Image (cartoon, rainbow, N blue to C red; front, side, top):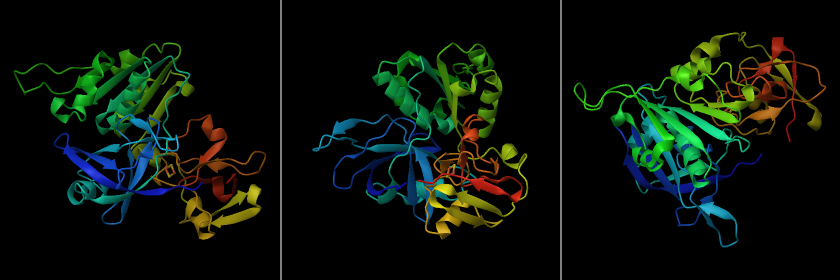
Length: 339
Ligand code: FES
């Protein structure tokens, strides 16, 4: 359960679009950084006291350490400046510069590629491209079949355009606006419903993007097998967050493996209550979207979870729970395993 924190240097800050800036992070003394698989994210501690998770946007360029272990030369994150920023994206855009040192967490992957897939269909909306670009590059290097569909307002809003061009015909673009305004080349549209109408056997679908995009894709993929659909939200979908959740009540968190019962107050999360006892569960988003705080449910114990996450499938919810947001139903008991 231990996470490592690293210090990295901002080697390059590059504006990709009017809204999106890429930050290239390297080891301060030129060593390699821990390797990662596509779909991974890092937590970044920012000026102003913020911590935010960001997906690693490119496939790892691996090389061997002196001890033989694989490492990589850089991490790249692509950050969209959000008009309604809670401080994270504004802090990165305005207060972080080339040469600055940042503290980051080591990469964690809660949105991995599934090796059993025969074909990977990657659907990216806006800055949701970042984890899917890393996946596309990793699949491309491995010679594995994939299609990356990128939905953006226009070419001018397309981040990592050079990396997308390098992936050739495996990339399909949906652009809402014609290039160069009226009179320019026409807009390009992809029909999501048509794209997802007939899931081919062995095809896995991955999606990441803003809430409206996610809703549209999930509606169109409602007939797909749950095990073949994988997604990552930026933030909890607002309508889902408010639906079905009861007012918070105190409850009892039971950890049979440690022989403890932990009272969780109405204004506390299970993670906070455990932290007060000196038991740290790793967290990142603290909003139920990233999956970092997910632990197994204790089998055979009493109690029923009220799941409030947006990262577990219905099948996964039978055996796991996200402790940053979920609670025991009706103020009862919730039994989990914590290594
Ligand atoms: S910390 Fe992200 S789901 Fe709990």
